Length: 146
Image 1 (cartoon, rainbow, N blue to C red):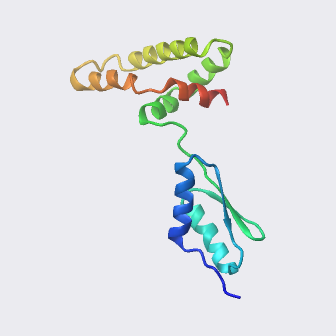
Image 2: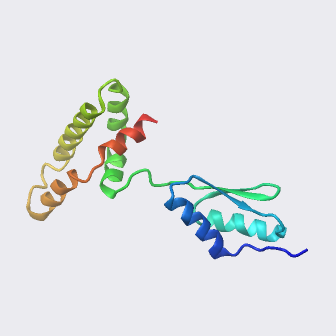
Image 3: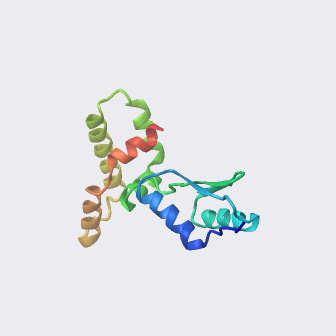
């Protein structure tokens, strides 16, 4: 009876394909594998930023999304105004989603403008102004509702 050995590229392909398909869990069969290869597969999955657990004949790989937001602008707004966003979303859960988006966007834009009151010259103000359009308020609301 021969042994089947996973190689690194096969593990990476399986995980990357699952990520592309939006899957959160990948099960890799370890039937007829050596124990050393099973441990290596777990290590490779963890190096890719996933959580991996070895079972009797399988490795369960959980894909961890460490980036809750799709762009830098939304991530930075969340980082800088975490408490404000959390409080606003918690206090206004009963609002319709579009009204909450409007309230959140107006509040955050006013906060950012007040923080940057003295930065009103040239390209910096243009960059900040253009960044408002890139903030994904729906992602912020979904993240803070959790």
